[in-house]
Amino acid sequence: MKPAAGMVLLALGASAVPAAAAVLRGRVVTLEGRPATEAQLQIVGHAATLAIRTPSGEFEQPLAGSPSQVEFAAVAGALDVLYPPDGLVPVPRDESVHVTIVVGRPERAEISEMLAERLVRLESTLRANGVRFDAARDSLSDDLRRVLAQLQVGEAELRGRVEFQREQAATIPEVIATIDAYVREVANLRNALQQFGPLAASDGNAKAALQNSLLAYNAAFNQLNDNRRAYESKILNYWQGDAAERLTKHLADVYFEAIENVHLGLVLPLNPSLTAIQKQKPSRRERDDAGAAFARAAAQLDARLSPLTRRADELRDALQREMESS
Image (cartoon, rainbow, N blue to C red; front, side, top):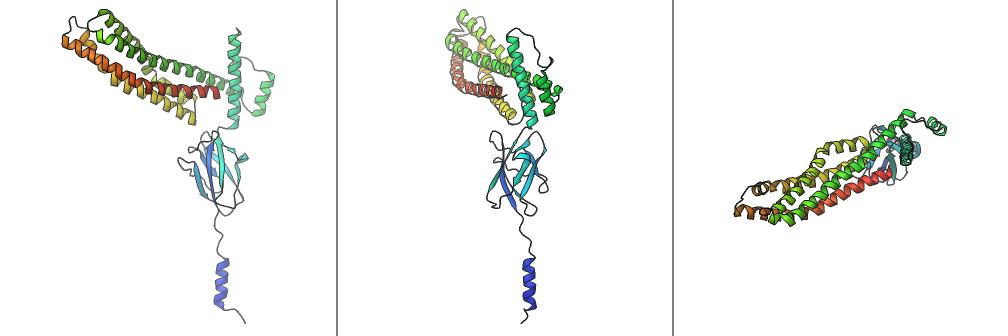
């Protein structure tokens, strides 16, 4: 008995349904294990731009058909695919399995930077021992030249990285010294206000000691404030990616504490009291008001020293970590 025509049509229709497209799920991270939300990647032949979620670094990408393997590649920017090798990722049969993609600076750039760091250390050691050696200009060993040729790293590129690392090395102690000097003078001003503030309106020696402390504070503040843009620019020029973001955030935190909370909030409001005690004969009311203002400022500076010092320590630690890792 022949099957009914309708049954044949239904059978044909069922066999013609296309297989569902595969979905690849995973996470893009940096070498440090942090989500690499800023990475710009593609899955060759499947996705011109991979949508990476913020802040998790995860992605969920439908694929064309059901490939057994796909290739991840960098579209633009400073981050390359470091793992899997050659960016080739087996597609798991179980779509609940997440793959891991690791991105970072190109390996050629990392190797070039390590060689530059070695030359900078050699230069520093030789100079400490009285030997004049300029790593950005003096001759390289034949062995190093052969290594550069094998890695296809130009000598000019290496020399440029030497200069770059020098600037990094010079920036770190400069920023730390400026901020440490400011924190120190804030503490000294607090002490001067506590010790000399109550007597400054009536005792010439106390007034002179308080004024000297204020002059030292102003010098440290001006050094800090005048170099703000320069320090921000140097960090953005000599560090990239996550490192630059971390350092600029710590720097901004220090400046917020120093300028908004300490200088504008507590030190500048002392000007009327300082002006009053400069008079030849300030009134009793002016002397009392000035003494009270100095006492309040001393207590408030004491309270703000802790967060200011903490912010400064966070920046110092971050800068020193960068120095050790470079």
